[in-house]
Amino acid sequence: MSTSAAVEDLLRRLAPQVLASLVRRYRQFDAAEDAVQEALLAAAVQWPEAGIPDNPRGWLITVAVRRLTDEVRSEQSRRRREATVAALAPADEFVVTSPDEQQATHRDDTLLLLFLCCHPALTPASQVALTLRAVGGLTTAQIASAFLVPEATMAQRITRAKQQIKAAGGAFDRPPDLEWPSRVQAVLHVLYLIFNEGYTASSGPDLQRSDLTREAIRLTRAVHTLLPQDGEVAGLLALMLLTDARRPARTRPDGSLVPLAEQDRSKWSQEPIREGIALVTRALEHTAVGPYQLQAAIAAVHAEAVRAEDTDWPQILALYRLLERVSPNPMVTLNHAVAVAMVRGPEEGLELLAGLDADHRVAGHHRLDAVRAHLLEMTGDRVAARVSYQRAARRTTSLPEQRYLESRAAALGE
Image (cartoon, rainbow, N blue to C red; front, side):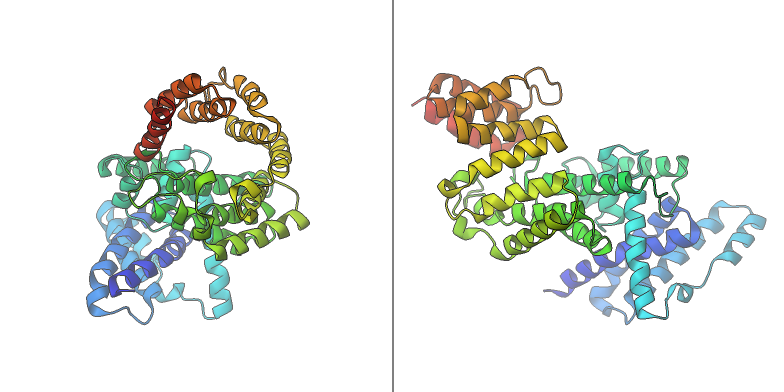
């Protein structure tokens, strides 16, 4: 790993720790986040040349506190400014003497920072952006690039999110016990969205964004370390690992999409598969069943099949039935329809899809057309399948998916 890459990796890991320290001390998320970003930028410029300091976290905190102090001095009246500056602690007060206490503080602060970024006052898009910026350590430019929007647009989104948190009275405290389950669920949902956008980019020339999938896995692994007994956290981490394990086989050298049934499974990464299966197995044995665990269990069944034709579709069908009871939504129904088709025939799968045409959440979505096309092709209705593939191709904004769907339609027209 090059020096610059090592610095970037270190800064990404330290970013949430430094931000959490400042927010915990000064209770000003927006000002602290701006100060930390300036400290990270200074480190990114200086450290590759001057070397990484002996106490990189302390270095970042010192620089960030100076930036925060300068901001206070420039914006507040003399009397209030003097009182505030006097209250600012030296950077070394942030250093925890006991290594165990220091590690525990970092863990607690990271989770509280995730809770703050996933504040219920924010939209899911703002939660994702703020999480990537504050906890993931990504720059505004990197986040904008990942979601294919101008940097100025993403900067405005992040600024609004910080203002909304401030207006809503977002505090850097553990949520009340009654809110804890819903807030953990919000954190997991944001991490799930980040992973999904990385695994299948919603638009653009590339099928997948490995930077986002890696970041989602890293952050979910951190949450699992914080909450090792939470079955849904373990389930989400397992789902990500099992799904991402297929990444080497998902595209051809030219970047074109390879569907699951046609992938060379010898290219699947075995270490994350083993870890994912172990995680979901333990979670299902010892905790209440949740939707992420069930999705991970389905991914595990796929991972255990040496060949596509060896897939235990009856087991997958049973898992999807349970998933629809636990967490009903149209995307689950889409996948359930495929499992029904594989076990009972495509006609029954198509019947299940028919009910989705009136569901505004998925009607008009390219995935509904794509699944219908696949099942129509299984029935032998090439004309109808071709029409559905063409419609799906027109509706997707992902170029690799569009090209794949167009190729399927063209093959049926021959």
